[in-house]
Image (tube, rainbow, N blue to C red; front, side, top):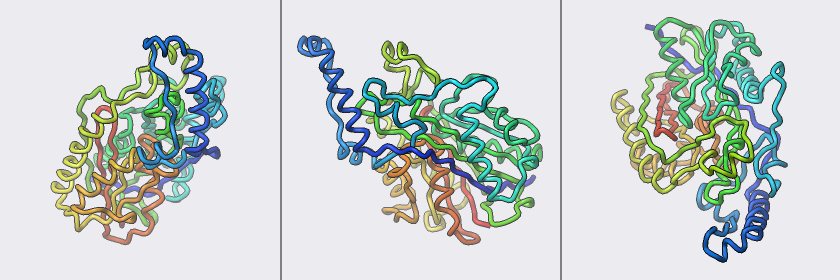
Length: 372
């Protein structure tokens, strides 16, 4: 039985950002147009008026201050309010593959590993640009890795599920290394015209390189153990799925884009995640005092604060539980990996941390790592 280690990470960050203030101006303009166009129906009580949003509301509800997006102009166009990502020719790299390759190259460079030495590529994300051929196989071709590649989707838990999958293959001896890549183009499946969720998501891509521990060439994190769980729920749902969509779908079916019952999610997911982490730590013989850092899924600051307090038995410090939510917003499966990539280099040999993600499904995944 071999052991696995995280030897490199990479984060692709788009160049364009949208502040809460910018988003609110666009959303309120859209709401005014909608209310004007539907004034008679609103007066008759057959149509609900759209309320205004505010930067204060967004910050209080989520802890988000801004988000990175691949296309700002489309999102901020009150007549449109979704990104303009034109379809590419079949012989051109897909958007997901392009940003995934960028993150993967950063991870490879950090680890000092050539792409040709990688045995497997897993593209794990909440929505994929197409059904097939697999985005992972396209990334494999663009990078020049060997072996095989495949896509997987466990919504916001896709990264941790991908890490366990890669870790299990390394432990079994079937591969020596794998890239788990999370290209999350969340702006394309968010309903920007819904006040309850229009501020939640941003775009990004992350990559995590895992190798046999004996192959690590520098500082790394040994994967001590992993734990996954799922429980079906309709409280977070997207019936459209893929990134290419038509305005007709958006108009006719609200559930064709991201939607959630936020109160139920908060009530049901927090106990599920807290219990999951506690059981994982107990099984691995780790106490709260042993835990140097928590890298949690970046969905909502209040949710993370609750989980951190449950796990540690007290309010966590910003160093113990770093948040990147204020700058990146919710980036689905990539959030916990951004937090890990940007807040892990200071750990010293023997210190232990836990990566955790959770989301639609419901799904929850945790990875306990030790600095080596």
